[in-house]
Length: 68
Image 1 (tube, rainbow, N blue to C red):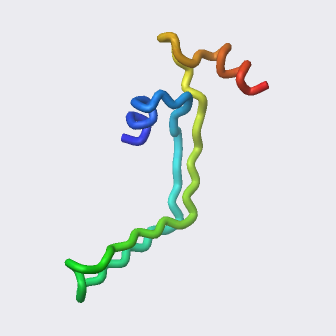
Image 2 (image 1 turned 90 degrees about the vertical axis):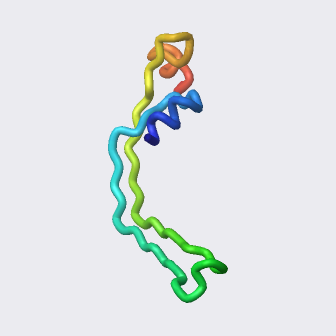
């Protein structure tokens, strides 16, 4: 789903791997309708790679020239 979102935004990269150390969810059960729930993600690591495009977007030559 994330790579599809990146594709729709025209991003020149894709996610190939990821890791989450921990996720903490806090739900205010006593005030569920009036207070906020929170989600805390710790230790997020994402591995990306360039996405080579052939349809007029980024290609390998364009990507490498933008790196210099």
